[in-house]
Length: 557
Image (cartoon, rainbow, N blue to C red; front, side):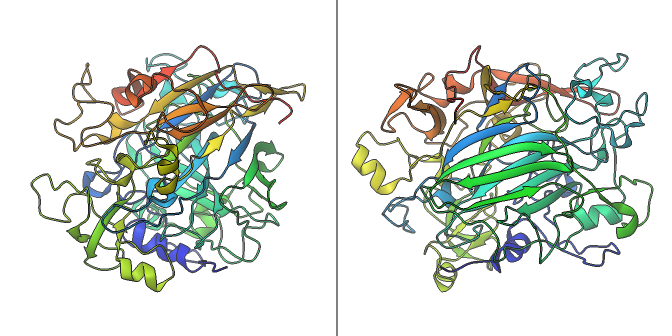
């Protein structure tokens, strides 16, 4: 088995944006996970662009949201998950071979809102009204009013981050391994006071970015180092002998639960018998970054605040969301799609594409100037024993790459042909949560949500997400041949119901929710965000809230 531990920091340098030299006095200066570049595929999608010079940033996230008004639903989640297998047919540069998981999604994840008093919208809690800090696992943190004069104004919301428990498929440059999956706990924070418009000082922006990330792999011993540290001030962690690796097709139990010293993620691999965990604790190196907009440095001693990260809310509903994120969610599953386009030649490894691959729409522009960034040559992949294709992982903002073709599971009517060239779907249960009496319970309602309006800025016509009508914001987006949506399977005769993502022809499918992304994700959703002069209304998502949970999990699971 060939581990690609060397690949992780290299991937960060080449794929997640321009190298940012840490201008801090951290004893371990590092090149950060730069969320402000359009290639930042591991970062939470923000409500507006944080790219340098107003450049486009963002990624495509079809999501499932889980709602309950019962305390415990906002801070514990237990899932069953089956890691998908790749097809037996290898991908080909002409696009007429198989499609592997890394082409559809460099990651998928389970999410939860967590406290970070140095994060947006109100870092430090002192810019609007009283000094409001985050009280873990409490709905007293809910501030979702649109009137700045009211006590519940969203700008008074305590500082909040978003946790994504991410899973990475094998085989290419964003992978941990040639053949196996790995997983990591990510916590994304935004260093901005939304009420004043201030960001952190320029030294901290250079060192960790405006959106900073705590990152740690799931480990069999729960220890995130050596080498590295989860802290945004680093150094960046790498895989080691104790990193949990998993095989395609493995059946997992994934637990998200709070502890005295931070949110704990546990993965039990029921197939291999292995397990791993990670606690988002100060002892493990997790940290907030001091919000110091008037400072002139990012001194490690003063600005790296070792922190235990705890869930924000007691419950999960339309009222529990990260106020600076594009999505409206708290407890959620999301796929990270729109990050692979075939490319036949590159300027340099990790650079731009100079010869477009199959499906690429040039929109009247020269090759490589549309959205083809973070690109690698097929021969380079072969040299490292990876799947022998060339392509790009930059954000596909013209929606013409592999994830927008008929290559998802269930897009062919012939099941045998579909399975020969398409991967199996990711399958997972609705989560169970633990109530105040220690009983496991199902979430009562679900919602389908996708952030297409947030990323349709470069379509023709562009999405008018700041208008009153949302003209030009469409689902599926312009340029797509196919857009994936959620279906269910199982749920009868004691069998656990499971969610899956793809087309309508996945064998065993029970409910297709209208049979298209248009019907499933529903109407435009207008959200409001705290800004200087208070609030800004915009369309960032389509959302369809169901009045029940059509795919409950069996409580013994």
